[in-house]
Image 1 (cartoon, rainbow, N blue to C red):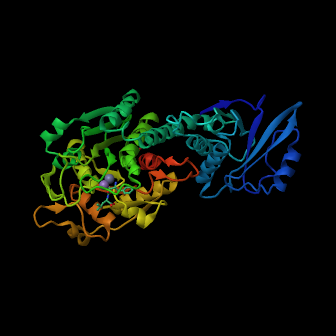
Image 2: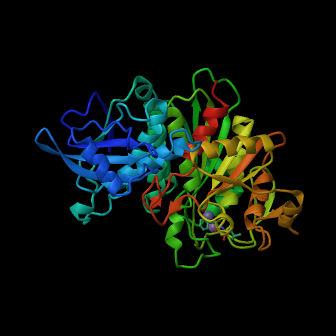
Length: 489
Ligand code: BES
Ligand code: MN
Ligand code: ZN
């Protein structure tokens, strides 16, 4: 779906007017029959609440015109940005498969314009994303009809700001694509291929193959991949924006392209969900696309640990001891706690290679985080209160919510092993925290680190305000905002 600016609503037959809460009387409904539209909206209990949509047909110059009123909520609420996005999403949700092919949003005289209105456009664009290409028999009336949303009356500030926001939405779309594709399509090598186009945006790409990783001693990551016929990869994407000479911020993503559990095999029911066990890597790739797409003035590296976790004659066994690149040894108690094994080598390599001040990893790491937080927040674990504040602020303003959990020595000792430096699982309790403690053992002194357990956020079983059911793209907007607010001058 395209979003395009237009000077006016002339000749439009489907026109949407944003209306703030309680603002129906003063809304600039540029139609001859605006009073009729207003009265009809009152009858239908339209109040301008966020995401409320009312539509009716009126006669304009002897032709029928569909007039849509879109509620955008309170004008100056703290949540105005969120409200506008939601409103945009609601508009798309209502008309995406309605038969309407093109609609025009009239911003002339509306309560929203300027950079703020980018949020409305973002919502429109994000909610339109679908992954339908394998549904060859989908009836026409269930396919998206909406091809373009025209924005009339946009001021210069909005037209200047939109490309930046559009780049972020394109990053989200890449993440969703990577997450939504099945594991026979996206595996380590094809994940890398789908990110190659980032070089066109100026991203420098480095790929490590199995032999290189063997030489580097990445026994933990390679141990996970050794049961798969798909060779493991590390993908690094480096973006150095104009004027950014500082140490890079490094993002690290868990990219388990399919997680069967390995020899500690998962139960069959619901196992198909494990195609999205690369959601952390997907978010990192999408964030890099967003940052490069909007030419962020920052130095950022995204590193993805890409493996497939399969049971096989050559798969690693429970009880195996592996040596990670850092030299620390790990007793693999459970081959299904594989994400931390992948991340520990990716984290160590990233710190050696890029010498960052900040490292943030994203991973669909534990089922336990879903027990704790459901699908409303991702879990945040960090060794630095200042970083926690920065991430919390970015979470609030981006709409990708986080909730902080504790880490401490007491949790750390729960993963001590009698035969190696550590084991890859702790006791039943605090499963998300012991997973974070495991990663913490790979963070160098002085590095500010946060781990985001996004297992509950990557996939949605039902549609949300900004996504259809399926891949949400969680994390991209969070990381983009975190960089924009803290690392760009
Ligand atoms: N990828 C899973 C975590 C997960 C579960 C993500 C459900 C999304 C939905 C991870 O690799 C895993 O299997 N974790 C185990 C850890 C356990 C063996 C300590 C878990 O959460 O059960
Ligand atoms: Mn697992
Ligand atoms: Zn996993």
